[in-house]
Image 1 (cartoon, rainbow, N blue to C red):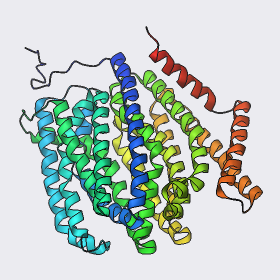
Image 2 (cartoon, rainbow, N blue to C red):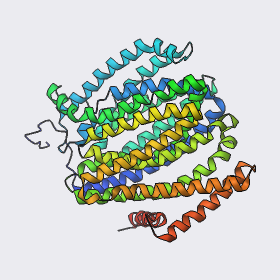
Image 3 (cartoon, rainbow, N blue to C red):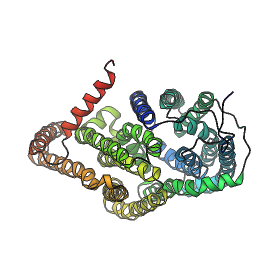
Image 4 (cartoon, one colour):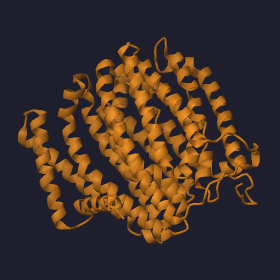
Length: 506
């Protein structure tokens, strides 16, 4: 029979994690999630290559609009209760977990009902066609797959059982890819993307419940819900408000460029999210790990700095060459119908590399209890994206979405780093360390691309890309030789040595 604390008589049986346990589990979790990410990226390549020949930009446009309403419902149905449970120092009691679980279901029932009632209006407003209302309603009902898995996932994340999460998520990806391709081959159009997402949700829900081994056992208590909301509401608003403001893309782009324009933006966003898929591994582990390390500010600062340096080095060495390769790569691999999105994918890829580091900083803000501060930064950035984005689309078409988003993200990255550095005396000059590699390598990328276009004139895209890649290589090596700022190659060598040491026998 297990012993339980008198202050938490209903606490689940889980051994407390010490500082060394947190670091070891965090490192193991990163490796497991990286392996899962490699597998998921492989599946994404298969899916993108296949679906890009079976579907059209208009299909992606309809799905983007429908998925937006579903994403908003998922945010509203959570309210940050699970994040509060992950962050708290003591193990969650059965009453806390059960109260959060039933709150999720109640919120979701309300949200789903509202979306289903509004489905005809949303379909008419966004001109989704005769099946638009059915698509919106179907995606709304699928929100239950999300709400029912939140607590099992929270329990696995709190104990840093990310290897288990990684295996389940890889199975989810396989199910989604197979479902989407099957439906697309049967000419279901946008429904194939919706169906694939629903298959993923159903498979994941069953597997997460089986892995967590939890069932509602405690008592629902309003006082617990209110306490969890005191932090959770600010945490969740950080995602809800930017997500809501992000709705300007289907609205404005749809009005100015049509559903095909929305489809190109949505497709470009998905293709450019590869850097985020890799970096999200660190970000996902960072929040529960940082939450457990708040009492040791020096160790936390060292862990955060190391994470940022290594992520920045890998991204700043890889992303610029990927950006150069995109214009000749996209039409050859995905088809000419997607070539109009090439420049947009370039901008989104650059922005994604900065968002990767910003995710680590945002995790520290939330873990340290400053979710309200994070929310204010996120809202300000979203408002700037909306205002500048509308003006940019009017002048440059869909490319304006990428230009404005990249400019705002760069500013937000600097401001977030400054706020985090002021909260911890061991993080002085963090904003300089964060910004320097992105600004210098970004300038070198612009110089290499500009010179290649001037030198090659009307030559093909492939020749321009090869010349630009050669110039960029020379410029990056010259930067390394100056020994100023972050040594990208030095950090890469340190990362490789760390991984080899981890794999070496004791």
